[in-house]
Length: 217
Image 1 (cartoon, rainbow, N blue to C red):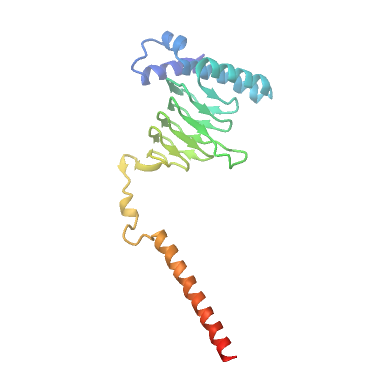
Image 2: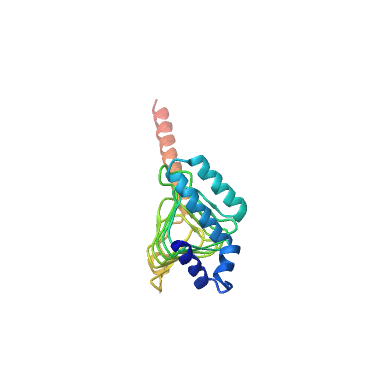
């Protein structure tokens, strides 16, 4: 009950539309998804995996939020709206996180064992973002809407784009232009043309040598 109470208070603090804890408890699908997940995770941890999946699938049908029973969810998670959220089996979510609808904490299909991301404490993942792979998103970080995160994000960062890149760290803007040499960038087309010219030169030399050899005979 203590955890439920602090979760309801977290919703009140983060959602300006929330009018009372009773309304949140009865009508917010994110709260229901977490309650079902606690039960499913308990069953999963005690090797009752069929029952665990049954509970999680019922929760998915009821709330539109799919959390695998094996996922580890911290305290005071707020799921805003929630429809379309998917959290994978080896995903971990820290304390005081905020996740919006359409978010996926998933895998890439290339990894074994730990396949899904770990969110640190106080991480916000905005609408439609995809965080894919067994890496960590650091504490107090922000993932922008519709970003696709494929590599580790340091603490106190803001990541945007597809694929996502860090644009702010601890409130300071990251200047990517100064880190990229835009004058001496290799042109891939030019590189291919140079390779073709080199091969043509070599073939011409070989043909000349063959012609000279036949002429001498």
